[in-house]
Length: 116
View 1: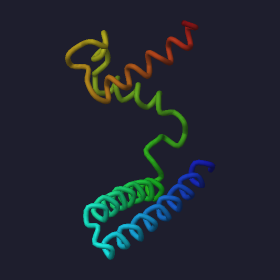
View 2 (view 1 turned 180 degrees about the horizontal axis):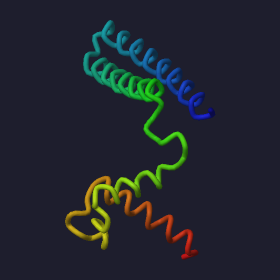
View 3 (view 1 turned 60 degrees about the vertical axis):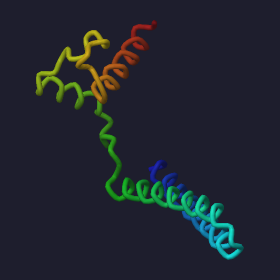
């Protein structure tokens, strides 16, 4: 699985970046440059957060349907919950968030299929 390997590499790269930023931050502290140290250590913390999120996704297997039937599952869920037509037209006030994003995706796929 190609994406799994790519994400492992990304985690390793983020670990290197975090280590480098922490090292620079500690050096800045030793030199008495507090503002620079705060900035560098803050960046290191954000990199660490990204690394943790990616590694958690790796452990959980990600959020995309493994069998490639995400569209069919989404359509079935819409039908089951009775929310069909919630975003028709897409400018409706109730059409927000994930529903709007899904409607735009469906619209884009349909346009591509029709050749527009």
